[in-house]
Amino acid sequence: MRLPIELIDGILDYLSDDPVSLSNCSVSSYAFTSTSQRKLFASVKITPPRCHDHASLTRKLYQTLKESPRLSAYVHTLQLEDVGQIVTCKNGVTHHWLALDEDFPLLLTTLPAVRKLIWNNGLNWFNWFALPCTTRQAIQTAFVQWPLAHLEVMGMVNFPLSSIKTTKPLRHVELRAVHFVEEIRPGSSDDCSAMVKPLLEGCTPKLKSLSLVEPCRRLLPELATWFAEDMDVSGLQSLSFKTYGGYYPKGEDVVSMLRILQASASSITTLEVSPALEGTDITTIPSLALPPLEYPNLHALSLGFEVSDLPLYTGDASGNSSAQWVARSLENLANSPSQSLKTIQLRCHLVQADPAATFDQDIWKSLAKHMCSPKLGQLREVEIQIHAVYSEAKAAMPAVSNLLRDVMLKPFGERGISLQIEEIS
Image (tube, rainbow, N blue to C red; front, side):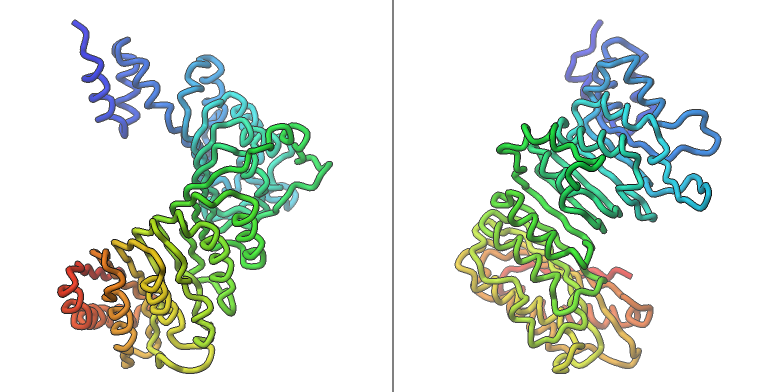
């Protein structure tokens, strides 16, 4: 008696997070083989080789796919973990495991259907040019040939942005702590222009989501301009921009982000911004706030900011400039020609240098006033997360939570807005 295909699919869906059980299913019955193999090979994670391994995971996978080529088409997600891990140092030269892996370029040639690439360099930064020429060329060739729709890169130096532009199906990009070069020098060993040029006509990716986290400060304006002008962000639905914790004087991080936002405001549905505004003169805040553009599709907004125990209006380059930025941004959004905000999340980082100091209540009153504006008539949910930056601030978190409730519960209740406050230490 044969099991219905729906039951087989249901069983394997239930076991999808258990590779051992899936592997057992693949050899237990012919009826399970094809579906279980599809699920087993749908997502492949490659990690650094361990010292006692006789062969790397890359070599094992390459040999498996060479012996069973049909499995190659099942691999839709490729995840590279801890690429920056150093495995050997010779003659004072630093080597990373992927730079020494001769099988990796060969493996890429056996993978025709990768749709999602996650490149995580771990705790160690990784320089693109630390890879051998053959490996770099193999990766760039793969970017052209793969149906790659989702790309995440974390902790890389000299990442070639031009590789992104050769990937026409690309829809989702996340760059976290990535330093970049815009173009590969013509005639260099990395130059694949002869192969790529015929494929570039009409090839500009139409991005749906973009996340930039702690980008290189020195090249941030160029990065924003590149995405706004060289990529198609006119249909961008999700934009996440986080520089919180870095130092970008005079709000240059926000200025850069606004270039992308202005090019995509009409299509944005989810917007997340956490700028590094500490140390910014509050007199510049109006020019840095989110502008009152038309946001006809904006439903969810997330803003990160800092509140310190310094006086609110100091008139110098300190104080709660980022809190003022949030207040002005909310005011501008309420005055936008069109917006449909339904949820707002505020991530507040408390900085308390003096345990005896108190936080200015006017901050919260100002935020509550703007979120209760009748112009934000569709707003239904507000979530506020309180993070303690220093240990001194942990003791102040309950008092701040109570203050928020005192200030916001009544006006929010009258407007039918739910309020959730979470303390995160």
